[in-house]
Length: 270
Length: 282
Image (tube, rainbow over all chains, first blue to last red; front, side, top):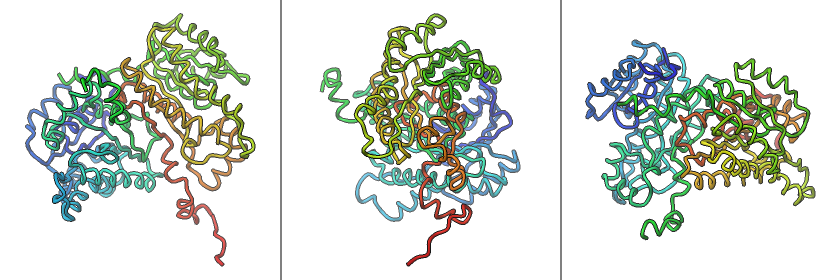
């Protein structure tokens, strides 16, 4: 049995894209604290028995795992119908999954791809939050949205992803205002350069090695860092925080630039 | 295997045996922060300088929270000797200082541009910014190591207008920048430096700065903008508990969302509910 304080006993946490990478890691932290978790996936490549095994080895409740594409409102409706039937409540929603197109060249900039990216990247947070109220009669107490510093600073191929993150961040501020009299808070975590499958998909697997040649391993954010911070925001300690963007990046965005390389030029052989 | 990988956060809610120092800790947000640590078992030292502190009342609040008895030490946060004496007292009981909360601030009330004074500015820096630096340097000397967590309290006055806040606002802005650099400098020692910003709390500092009528004015015309000192204290602990270890060199705002919607557009939106009438147009 886990020795973590079981502050999520009898509570339900939904994590989109919860069967792999950052989503899975976040779900495990909630589960270790007693939560019943609900995990969604789209790509279907995760071995679900292996996923369940990870929860079992923590002594955690078996997660409810459902295929649901965050871009499809029909899937959202079906998912919340099942959550209502199985658990009747949702305390925490972690908006992790995001489908936005990568832009490799100028020709990839198309209106269709942009709108599709917005639907898959920015809208799901709003869609799920409203669906929660519709199906379960109240909003979740905590919503955490995963974003990235690509919203502010250059990231390769990130044109549409970054735009959806910016839009999501703005929508979050307004949601915090609109629901300010509810027992509801919504915040954004901005991480960067986490070594996960989606990171590898996006950057082709060589970016991480490139980074490692220029900065120490401990500059790179881990999935565990972000998962713990997401849990922290939903732990009760940050109940007066809402509508905020919190960077979870070990301070690396602040120092990221040519000045850092200059400071370290001798050890880097530059 | 996963259990082990999650281990760093295992004891996040337990501060038993850990030493925590809060400057300006005898009232308001400092006191609330001390209690938030104490509730989780920390041995808290509160420093204070001005005003008569009712030591028994502070102790009673800790008892009520089920917290170990705190130490209250009178110390001048601008004087190295005074800081050293306070730290030496903690060192007698503890090998290490776990968390340092830089809360102390002394600000001039500025009512006009004529009142800007170089002397007041320097004094504000001495009492509201430099203690962050001087305490952390002194902690290294006394304990042989930096604290694991440093949190400095700031305010949204650093970014947007606050009544009479000119000099304090400039000092807080500088404080926030210093925090980012300190975090960069201290990261190799495993120390995390963050700023926690709030907007309005019902504290003596607010009354001293904004005047005695401000609170009632806000409650009448824009209710819901206040954050409880206890809520700020909880968030400070959150930054020091292990779950937020990758939050470093950041300014984190804990204000119930007030900063985003404290503007005329919102008053217009809510004018009926707030009974704010507009003048007739020309």
